[in-house]
Length: 160
Image (cartoon, rainbow, N blue to C red; front, side, top):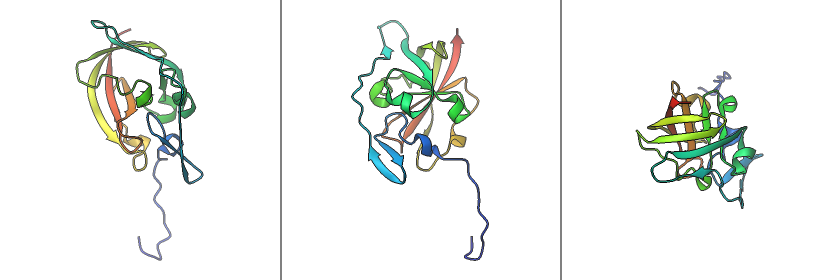
């Protein structure tokens, strides 16, 4: 773009409203980065050897619900892609990401799913919801190293 070019290119909204989603330690508020602390212990995941890894999708919503650490949150309405998410410190670190693993969701989005593997690593400062891979039954989002490295794991529903 030249100095005299006043045209603009519109991009889909970035993850601005949800920069802190899933394990990020910061939230962008009014242009300033503010630390977020959670004292809520995770109470959403259960795993018994020999049974599928289980996650409770307790509600649909956004950042406030994710920060409650009560389980995974359905972000489908927010992202426009079937997605659930939880902070890494609230169960996301333990979620199976290896293709072929079997997981069970309770609550919203209930069913048994096969993990297809990590299909994207996105940066909440640079990527948009348009960059989330499409064509999967469900995506599980958590952070690997804060909101600048969010992992997106594809899930295929295999049973109700």
